[in-house]
Image (tube, rainbow, N blue to C red):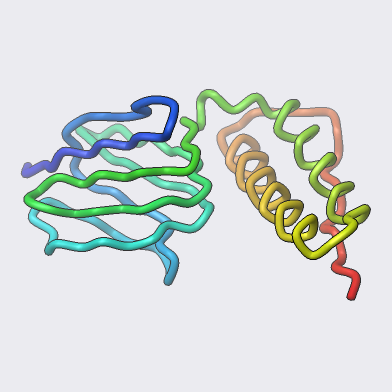
Length: 149
């Protein structure tokens, strides 16, 4: 089966670099499916899950935004942050979700609200993925914060 090179990097490190069969990424306008020999493309990514398939294996990562480029059968992702699903500690992710929910409720400005909502969304994605991957925790999820106007 044909493959393409996938490289995922953040400002801190290279997270992933392998030949893969397919990629599904959270594009700004919806999910993007990338297969070998895809047409050239440059797009922004939104926070979400990214699924990579290779030789029958599936890897899932959480990305919190960035950019994706497809060029000459090579996909490069410059991610704000990227984390493999197996690296997510559910208890820590749930704590981050609770803190983010509190930040939304206790914000002092619109800038605080925007940052708090970003942190909340990022934590939601991490917790959701960890739970679907079979990790367990004794704590219940915090309620979705409401926006004050």
